[in-house]
Length: 432
Image (cartoon, rainbow, N blue to C red; front, side):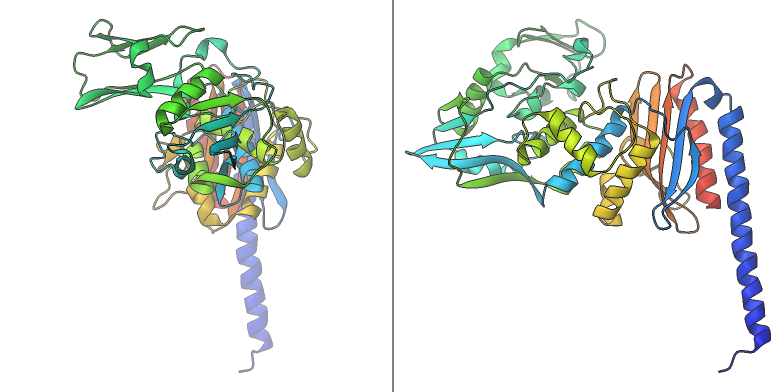
């Protein structure tokens, strides 16, 4: 069928009209966003950075202080996720293994999933059960806390200690299920439990000792507490021996002969758990594990290698895997570049699985809801007076865009900051 010249001209002008209207909508939305940053009572009383990027056209659509450094808080976990996607295959390495004279020798990677209560299946334990085991640890201990961590948070479950071979998430779990349980049960004799003597819930551990005071309400039917224990090679030997039913010792000599690498959990589900609930312990140990898998004991050297591989030209500071440290300093542009790496590395379904979904799951379950389905898939980052959100946004026109929204040094309630952020993200959803 032959198309007339008149029809072609008409189609052309319809196309120009549609694209022109879309361009006008985006321009008006962009101007409105600029006014928000300049005149909003929230944004003008804090330090705000923003960057919006289209990975398909490789165009930055909107920028505001995009090249200035901010405290990222748990947006740091985006970097950790990218590192794990780059280093790990389908599963996370737990230890290298060798049999020598009827003794199992293992060299751990730092895998946080070993005996972790959120992973009931523990395939990495099978080769060790009932067999005397020697654990080969690096000669230099890893520091229990990262640089810039708050030392007085040592007794809270969001700041469990780091270790070359963590087990049981490096914390004591006490819960009531018909009867009161203590896991690991080794700590039963080191816990003083008080009932109804203090309002609310409270746990306390001596800084230098594994001695615990736990307060619980009179009604203990739903009681559960978690508190980090202080790690040591000696404690590792005791807990492992209790678990595998055989003697366990540690040594600082390297394991020279390695038969195979043993794995415990799949990579993507573990990353999803870490990101959805912003788990600091998993993040720290996964980055340690990735470094060990690449032959690094020095975490600073490993992080520098990653920054070079990702070609991040921005001057930034990356000092831990979780974002607990206020020494971390990232620009919105650096975060967007790493998010773009993740976007290129995995499929969209995996991104939706790993990242919290607005109005539906994870740390943004109560924010950024879509009309029929989520439109924001992003990681929060929160410390006192700092809140960031970085990830992906799906617009009404079907575009998948990458953004980083960073807010530092505010004194207003954080919910007011989030509400102002939501206005900006909805403008992007509706107009781009």
